[in-house]
Amino acid sequence: MAATDLERFSNEEKRNLSLGGHVGFDSLPDQLVSKSVTQGFSFNILCVGETGIGKSTLMNTLFNTTFETEEASHYESTVRLRPRTYDLQESNVHLKLTIVDAVGFGDQINKDESYRPIVEYIDTQFENYLQEELKIRRSLFNYHDTRIHVCLYFITPTGHSLKSLDLVTMKKLDSKVNIIPIIAKADTISKSELHKFKIKIMSELVSNGVQIYQFPTDDEAVAEINSVMNAHLPFAVVGSTEEVKVGNKLVRARQYPWGVVQVENESHCDFVKLREMLIRVNMEDLREQTHTRHYELYRRCKLEEMGFKDTDPDSQPFSLQETYETKRKEFLGELQKKEEEMRQMFVNKVKETEAELKEKERELHEKFEHLKRIHQEEKRKVEEKRRELEEEMNAFNRRKVAMETLQSQSLQATSQQPLKKDKDKKN
Ligand code: GTP
Ligand code: MG
Image (cartoon, rainbow, N blue to C red; front, side):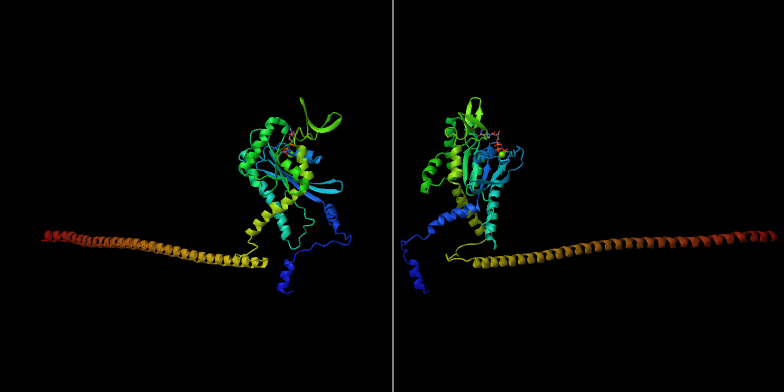
C-alpha cells in the first residue's frame, strides 16, 4: 500500500453501521466473565499494624472463616513478612487469597528501619512478576500473582494523633501499594473522640503528603457510594468471631459488662463499610490499580535503570534491539576502561615493587660496605697488635741472647778463676 493510501486510511473517520440482525458479539462480556470465573482470582492483602492490634481477628471476621492465627511475640528483632495463602470459594467463584502479616511491626526499640522489610517484600513480588513477563516462555496465564493489592494499615486507637512510625511507613508505601487506613479496636474509643481522631488522622496524612487509596468515582454505578465512603476514611473497625444473641438473632459481637458491640452494626463501627468497599465493590479496582499504577511505576523505573527507553534523545522510537546494542557498546567500553585501569594498576604495582627492591638492594649494599669497613678496621688493629707482639718478641729474644752471652761469659770467668788460683799457688 502506498504511503498516501495508508495516511488516508488511518485518517478516515470511523463510520457507525447498523446490523441487519443478531450477530452474537454482544456475548463478549459473558465470555469474559465465564473465562475469568474458570481461571479464578487472586487477591493479596498486607496487614501492617503493631502486634496484638487485631489483624488476625479482623481477617477472620472479614472472610467469615478461621485462618490459621499464630500469635506474634513482642521480641522479634526485626520486622518479618509472613505470607499465608488460602483457597476460598463462594458460589462458583474461586479466590486464591494471600494474607501477609508484618510480624513484629512496632516492637523494636529503634524503629527507623521498620518499613524496609515491608517495602522490600512488595518490591520482590513486583520483581517476580516482571521476571515472568520478561521470560521468553512466560506463563502469566496460570502465574500465581503475589503482588500486594491492598495494605490495611491498622492505626492504634489512641484518640491522639498518628505516630511518626505510622506516617513514615505509610509515606514509604504509598507509591507501591493501595493503602486503606483503619482504626483498629474502635470499641475502645468514645464516639466523640473517634470523630475528632478521624479528622486529625486525615489532616496529618494530607499535611505529610501521604497518598491513601481513594475509592474510584469514575464508574457511574459506584461513584456515589464510593465518594460517600471516601469521606468516612479511615474506617473505625471492630473485629470479633464470637457470636452473641441480640434479640432473637445470633450476631458477631464483642460483649462487655455494660453492653454489646455489634461488628455488623453500622452505628457501632465501620466494619460493614470496610467489607463493602474492600470486597464487594472495589476488589477489582484494587487489583487493577496495583497492575496499572503501582506495578507500572516499578516496571518503568526498573527498565529505565536497566537502560531501556522508548525514545532516543531526538524523540525517535528506540527499539529493544537498539537498546541492546547501546548497552552492549556501553558495557564493552566500560570493560575496556576497566581493563586499561587494571593494566595501569599492574604497571604501577610492578614499578613500585621494582623501586622497593632497588631500595632494599641499596640498603644491603650499604650494610655490606659498612661491615667491610668494620672488618678492615679490625684487621688493621689485629695486624698492629701482631706487629707490636713481634717487636716485643724480638726485643725479648735480643734480651735473651744478651743474657745468655752474659751468662756464658760469667761462666767462663768463674771456671778460669780456680786455674789462676792454682797457678798462683804453684808460683
Ligand atoms: P499478632 O498477629 O500477634 O500481631 O496479633 P493480631 O494483630 O493478629 O491480633 P489478634 O487478632 O490476635 O488480637 C489480639 C487481641 O485483641 C485478642 O485478644 C482479640 O480478641 C483482641 N481484639 C481483636 N480485635 C479487637 C477489637 O476490635 N476490639 C477489641 N477490644 N479487641 C480486639
Ligand atoms: Mg495475628
